[in-house]
Every structure is written in structure tokens, then in C-alpha cells.
Length: 110
Image 1 (cartoon, rainbow, N blue to C red):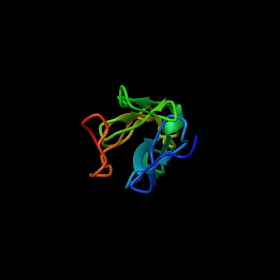
Image 2: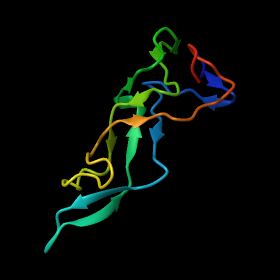
Image 3: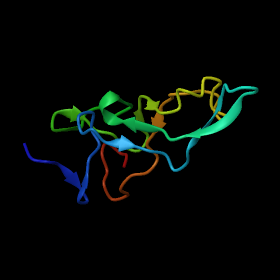
């Protein structure tokens, strides 16, 4: 099977190995002497770890594909901030897909 593209871009699937990085760093409170410090951590998520809320009936090369509204299961990079993130109060949470190609529709979503 060949590579499947949409608008000359790759399609994100569970086997495609795409990495997702946010627009901003994750600021987590990290234990340090003498007091905890807010430290920025770069985070990354991979599609290989799984996609939640993927397209139900549409498959690309036999695996589910991500659309706007899909969620990559987990992100990594801010684990040292054991006192949680400053804004969301969690670490290694889900990563939401919020932007896609507006002219490509897959089961009523982009």
C-alpha cells in the first residue's frame, strides 16, 4: 500500500508515528531546595501510543485516523514536575487535536 495523503500532507494514524508538540511549554512546580520552583518543561506526544475518539468507520492503511476532536492518549516530558502543572494541575495528560485541514472531511469532521 502507498502512503495516503490529504492536501499533500500526511494523515495522522496510530501507526504513522507522528509527534505533537504544543505551542507553549508546560510549567510545572518542581520540588527543589529550599522551596518548590515553577520550571518550564518541553512536552511531546506520539500517535503510536494511541488515539482516542478517532474516526469510527474510516481507516487509513487499516488503522484508525485522527480528526479534529481526536485525542492522543498521553504526553511526556513534564514528569519531573511531580507537584503538577501550574495551570491544569496534572502531568502526562491527553493531547487534543484542535486544528486540521478545513477542506478535508472525514465522518463529518476535519
